[in-house]
Length: 127
Image (cartoon, rainbow, N blue to C red; front, side):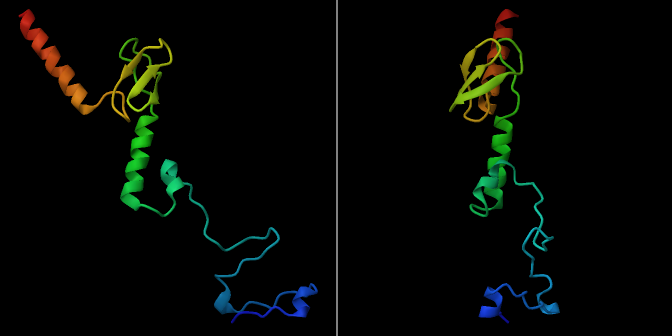
């Protein structure tokens, strides 16, 4: 049942008591304890999307962004200070070495394969 606003409520009279059927739905104003859901704090970087785009897509975005923001080793000096400057452009904060890589990681799986095959070919030539 909805309580109609009347002159007694507008004049500062207390609200009518909520029955047992409204116990879980009502919350009080004025800094007192509420019965609404508590936040868990698990949204991560994809929390900005709210309830849109689906759970799997939001999870993928969160995984990609967390991997992108991790510490990456510089291929030149070896320090863990590589930051993303733009799409596929990475720069070491220690030695200022700038190089290209993947959009979200400094080294893509395809790049690792190419590097491995070049090393194997060079080692065959030396033998």
